[in-house]
Image 1 (cartoon, rainbow, N blue to C red):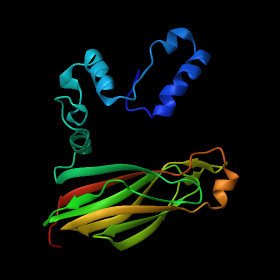
Image 2: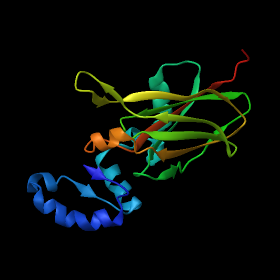
Image 3: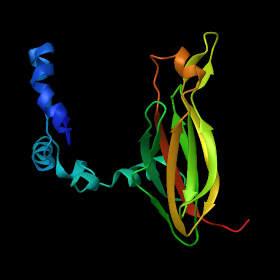
Image 4: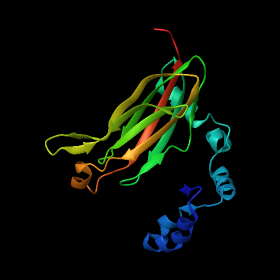
Length: 196
């Protein structure tokens, strides 16, 4: 296993952590803070044609692979981002998504977060819609399970799309303290903007 672009604190603490792991397992895990050293190690283990162009290889990009996997001939591309929000705080997506003239986007949030989040979609810095998203509670024991929430069904370009999230810290987050919280996978499906 290669861990690439690890934070420096993790690289430093790895020496201590691996003492608690079976030695045979520990010697199979390599941690790299330096992107260059990590990519050199990756290229020694994996053929260049198998590594996505996002990571310096020659295979299709991760976003192109997701688009092909969706099996939707109208899908031009998918913009994907994982957003994490800490308890009782706010977070802003690090990336923005560009919509061109003649394109529209559907944005879906996937989450298992028991605390829930209030997600705001912004177009050119102006709030378009705010939606609350959290996991589902299913079965007789009301166990938390993944949920998909459509944030916007048709956002037309041109423009720059950005996302903000606020942790709701709801009652469920207290009841299910040991469950997942704060993680939201945001997927923007971009298609041609057809006039209805």
